[in-house]
Length: 153
Image (cartoon, rainbow, N blue to C red; front, side, top):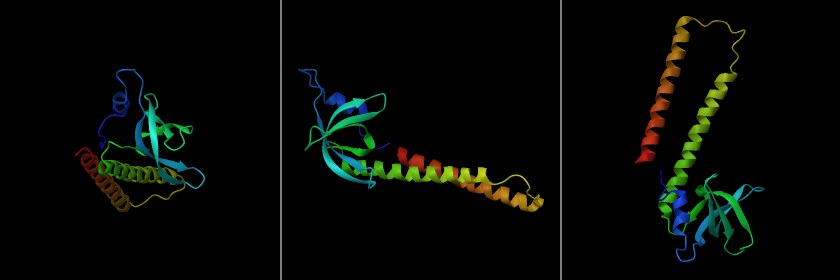
């Protein structure tokens, strides 16, 4: 959505035409600490792209012996990328994740509602409930369509 170039393009640009070897691309990456669940932006060199996993391999700029594989593009900001577009991409990804989690929770809770030993509702109440659910689903679909269209613009 907010990508300047496809992931494989970055490594194609790093190919040295004289030697046929890939050069390392300077970037910043969000390195996550699994214990504290926090991250820190560090200078890195991107040296490979895995098409199968759609991830990059990086080495820390200050410690070239420390290599991290399977780093998704979401956590990498190439030096030649526009930072504001990168921020929009992260922001929209977080919003989309939040909406998706809400939808998953909604349907999870609906499935967990007991369906046995329930007294039958009067028809007028059942109709009101169904109308409200249909309205909320309709509004949810409109909101999702609106968000997707905004992402495409």
